Length: 503
Ligand SMILES: *[C@@H]1O[C@H](CO)[C@@H](O)[C@H](O)[C@H]1NC(C)=O
Ligand SMILES: *[C@@H]1O[C@H](CO)[C@@H](O)[C@H](O)[C@H]1NC(C)=O
Ligand SMILES: *[C@@H]1O[C@H](CO)[C@@H](O)[C@H](O)[C@H]1NC(C)=O
Ligand SMILES: *[C@@H]1O[C@H](CO)[C@@H](O)[C@H](O)[C@H]1NC(C)=O
Ligand SMILES: *[C@@H]1O[C@H](CO)[C@@H](O)[C@H](O)[C@H]1NC(C)=O
Ligand SMILES: *[C@@H]1O[C@H](CO)[C@@H](O)[C@H](O)[C@H]1NC(C)=O
Image (cartoon, rainbow, N blue to C red):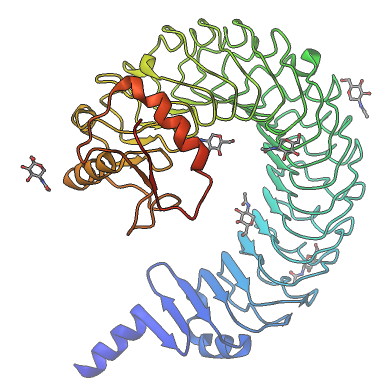
């Protein structure tokens, strides 16, 4: 009986040192162990090991015999490897996924991976690889995904990427400073290409052959202009990210034909102006991010054909006005206009009543009454000029409200009754009268609504303005005067509590 239990447990999980073999998933997982030790201990079950995952071990060089498990399909080793014996992968041709990310590999050679005839995914992310040799990958017959991100590649030579079957290519976070027009010439089936975070200034002709591209990530490159033909063949493109480049304009012609776009990101570029009709043909757009592109206005027709648009980031611009009809045809659920120069919204701006998240922080709003009919869940109005929130002016659906750094002296108790779903209220940085401040704290604790302590409230003493009375009763006409007095002293951070005379 005892022996039977022993044998049974031997089959379910085998544990030697820091290794663990799971009979069901066929995963051999090891920590802190020498490669030779793993191999000798698992020699008996090696026929069974389908998946190998070794980490935190010290294997500076991968030797030819290190992976003797013929059935292995998934192999991940992250053990500080610096060098790979060219014969390491000659006899393990069942591997489908090879993950050598997070090592210190600086060099790979031609033929090293050639016999991995079933390999579909190769991950070399986070190593110190230099420019790969010409035939390092091209002979891997079934390779679909190649991850070379976070290495030290500066140049991709001609023909290195001649891989017509490759679908996903990640070259992001390297030091690539030039891409020639023929680099991607054979990537005719590539769907995802990520070359973000490199030093590529010019992309002319680079995408002339990648007709199947769906996702293209180019952010954080010093690209100054988009050639009018750049995306001409990439008509299937769904996602384009050119944030943090140096684009100083977007020519309409450069975008004709890419009508399948769903996500478009151009934040942090000195673009200055959105041309009339830029988004007109892109009727499938769901998300547009044009934060910090130095625009001061948008015309009423900018989004008129974008019936699917539900996420729009216009933050960090100089917008002082949004025309009443500008969102009329959209399905906006998320709008970010923080850090602009807006002062009021027109009654009908959000006719479709779908807004769930709205960020109005750091503008010049004095009231936000027009939002009451939106199904808002999160509202950010930090850093505006709101001195009063009237009854029935905020949506009942609110779960999160940030009114930090406004001009509120008090908040009426009825506000909490109006927002039964509220779970978090950020309200510090207002010149709250002390009696009112205490009322708010009581109400928040009664309703289990959280807030962040900090800045003006360290958890023990509060920054509030002592008003004459011990009761929180303030007349609306006094608000402006009160705020003016507060402005004079608010930067004096040494003051926890400020005394005012009400005269
Ligand atoms: C590796 O592949 C080459 C041809 O690509 C072949 O000649 C060689 O026999 C293979 N090696 C093994 C051990 O399968
Ligand atoms: C590339 O590898 C890194 C590290 O393993 C991983 O975080 C990243 O998701 C990989 N990229 C893709 C898209 O597979
Ligand atoms: C890319 O294609 C366009 C036409 O679509 C052509 O004008 C341009 O010269 C090509 N660029 C290169 C470098 O082949
Ligand atoms: C805005 O974009 C510029 C580049 O055009 C960048 O240097 C700056 O840091 C960005 N500012 C913010 C607030 O992101
Ligand atoms: C709005 O944009 C600003 C600046 O880009 C960002 O910091 C903030 O997190 C965004 N707000 C929301 C709610 O996503
Ligand atoms: C909140 O206030 C109500 C009415 O004043 C009271 O009945 C209730 O016990 C309080 N709840 C908590 C958790 O303090």
